[in-house]
Amino acid sequence: MHSHRFDRPIRITAHARNRMIERGIDEILLQDLIETGEVRHKDDRRLWIAKCYPQRNDNLVCAAAALESALVIKTLMHHFSWEKKP
Image (cartoon, rainbow, N blue to C red; front, side):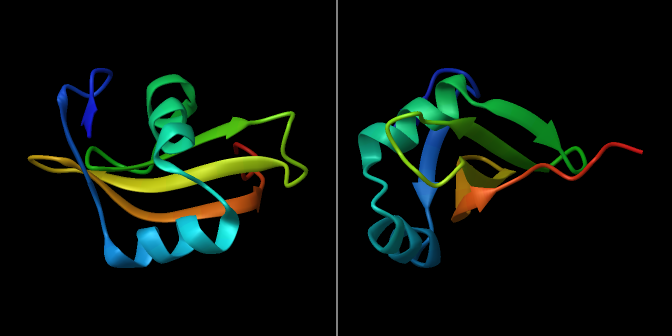
């Protein structure tokens, strides 16, 4: 997989793959999330990407990721909500 948005390959950790299976997230949905979801940065390397999928009943789907030589997907969450901005 490759992200056009982040202009780098996508690497999915084993932990994230397990969460994909548990949460019914396939690579097509993950690709859409990466390319079109809302991005919030924790710092210059770590970020979250989240998006609501109306056909799902679990609120926002979110990927926690790191920008390295690849976009590394660390985990996938559902029933996610953004923290309130200070």
